[in-house]
Structure formats: structure tokens, C-alpha cells
Length: 363
Image (cartoon, rainbow, N blue to C red; front, side):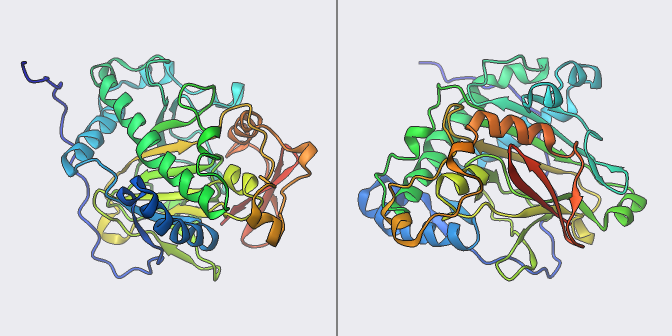
């Protein structure tokens, strides 16, 4: 049998790792390969439960992709921004305001960050099935690899994490998995994302914040670690701390939908992006994400059958009868983010109401 030929791709050279002395958040590193056995899942479940209760964040290693495979996917991700014309990007722009979907390109300067400053963030969003949407010509040779990558994220990272979170609530292992079906309607998607350096004037006007503190929409977010250090989480003590780069590692966090389904037991992580440290400020920040969401028709009500919730009680964001479906919540949050009026509560927190739920943004 002849060897499979993969199409060539220009190599993306990432930024050097920062040498600055930064205040990093301290959360656990999970060897997800252990989740393949019942004994391993039992060992990991408590660690994952406590991390998602305390921080809403954890690191994952040994996920099954080699360093070389990771680097190739980053090379492919960069194609979406360097090998596609502005005209073609515009023709494939997301219908964010129209239908509440990120599918396609989110172009630069679409959102308002602060004091009239528009964002310098570009991303390309793909439905997890990959072949169910139109793609730019430059990416078409890589679609089979992109499909394999989404399947890897879905089955080898998302599903194992969901099983561990179910065990943490003393629920059957497949409880959350059964709400996340690859071929069902839903917006679990792959994102290639690039932040570009800003002017000093924009940095002053926004107090160096590139993306305000927020929580994610879906259940579980998977970020493929990259070296430009700009992501911060709000620690339990209320301080912003940096997320450290782990080569070929993943940063995983819970979103609003997981917090609602778990009755407040797992915390949707508050996180933001700020200007990188001085030794990385001239570099763009290229990243890959997989955003997990429950199937569109799943109503985001607490899983009250959990023995844990029956013991400690449930924290709701809204009454069960008013709870949105995953599809309703996704579309409403997508339409509102960066485009609708925020009400300032204090020097740090701004609020908006989406589908009857208070959504907070943090300076």
C-alpha cells in the first residue's frame, strides 16, 4: 500500500515562550489517558470535580496527539488568516447578528471592547462535522485533517471530561455524554483564532484588556495551549492570574451551560485576554479551540437527580420553567456579545440580561 500523501502547508513559527516573571494560576494537570479505564476514571473524577468546583479550569496532557500533529494543525490554522483574501473572508462572514451563529469568519473590529476601541481579533469557526459548510479555497485541501481533529477533540477529550464530571455528581457516567451527540443538531465547533497587536492608544483606552472578562456559552471549552501568554482567569480570591503555557497541553474550562446543568456545582470560569508581556508584544497570538455544547434541544435545567445536588442543594440562574434550550441560549448569547448595551454595576462588573439570565462582564 502506498503511503498517504498529505498536502504541504506553510510552517507557522510560534512566539518564543515569555521569560517574564508572571503570577500564574495554580490548577491541576490531568493525564486524560487514565480515563480509558474504570480505575483511572475513579482516580481522576475527584481531582476534576474539585478543579471545576474551585477554578472551573484544568490542564490536560497525554490526549493522544503528538507534538508534530499539534504543530501541523497550528500550521493549518494559520492558513485561514494568511492565505485567504479579505474579499473571501467577507463572503464567508459569520451571521452573528442575523442568526446568532459564529459559523464562518468573525472579522476584525466587529466588537466594541471599551471606550470606542474595536477588537483586533479574527477567527474562523467550523461546525464540528466540517463538511457541512462552505470553506475558503485555501483550507479545502486540509478538510479531512480538520474533520479528524474535531473528532479527536469530541471523542478523546470532551467525552472523557464529561464522564468525569458526571461521576463527580454521582450520576451515571454517560449522563453528560448522552447530551452531546456528534451527529445531532448543535453548535459544538472548532475555532481558529488570531489576535493582532494593537496601538498604544488602544491599549491605554482599554487598560490593556483585549477581551473583557466573561464566561463561555457552552458546556466545556478546549483550548490548545500556545506560547503567547495573555489569557487570565479570575482566581477564587478575586485576583486575575495568568494561564501558563504547557507544550502540547490543553486548557479546559466549564461554561455557562455546564454551570446550569450542574445546578451551580461546576463553575463557569471567568476569564479574559490582556496585552501579552513585553517580550511577546510584537507577536500575533494564534490559537485553536473546540467549544463543546449540548445538543440544541437540551433544556438547561439542573440535573436534580444527582445525589450530590440532593445533598447540597441547587443554585439556579433562572426558574426551571424559564430555562432556555441550548440552542436558544447559544443564539441569544452570540447575538448579544460585544454588540449590545451593558449596564455598569461597579468599577469592575458590567451586566446584561440574556433570555432572562443575568450575564456579567468584567474589566
